Image: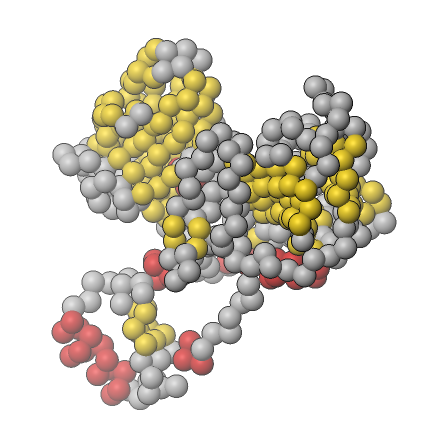
Length: 431
């Protein structure tokens, strides 16, 4: 292996790959609230493993895995995503019937009921029954909010916002309230954006940001409301990068939903870290930031994280201290993999945006495995693809250091030092 040298993307670029996070959904056969339930329903259309009922589409992929897709515009997605690459599974035995206003899909392991014509999937119109360790289980479907959603009056985590222009999630300091914080690194156009919901009336409000400025100069960020400049946040030094303060700027908002963003614009000082943002009544204190769900939520058996680097202020020497996103496996016996907002995967492996939608859209995968966790992993592997075995060179010696080496550094000092000391090098990471 020592005679093979690989030039690889930076560690930051390699870390950008994500594994899907799981969220909550599971359900049972007992009575679903039947408010406004229709008195009759048309027979569902069944083709292969697909069941179509109006604007709702279900794909029975295995006895323990069902895709639930709702499209108000009847535009269903058949392409691969950056989570799910294969839905072409052998068709399992199942039945689909419609009676009393409900669609019922039954496999050997699950019974799903949906009140036809009732709109997107909610705890009030969808239910799945399954057996968990010999006991029947009922749970209600609960779909996570869209990325970047922020309720008026709530502290919303920066790492859960819509990030663009070079804004990135970091973990290398302490004192943040979620799984991390965001940094712009002074890159003009770096942006942290939110869709703020529930603004009570048109009027004047405050945008508040919990930030850290470990430098010695006061810095600024621009605030945009519905795409237009709306003010500038002034952020004095906080003493160090582990100390946090709050900056506030007045804004004028419409009633209901508004797009609010902080951005590094030309003329801003930038170079600050953001922990969370809140839109509040003028003069209100900063609300407690709502943490993103860690894998320690009830029943969780582990999940995923962006990286496992062990250095001070991240995981330290003990990587088990790293907070994880929830995973598919849970002792409750079910989970929902929400794929609604994942980018599409083109034929040549590149990312493409989801098409614009008219009305509500949901796309998720219900895993109902009971305590058969191996089955859950088999289902996950079936739709996301097998993990590829790393090539031989990847198990050799890597050199990677976050430092601005020059070409001369590599050619005249670094690589000759490896040769002079008879140390093999299989991968050189250029950051």
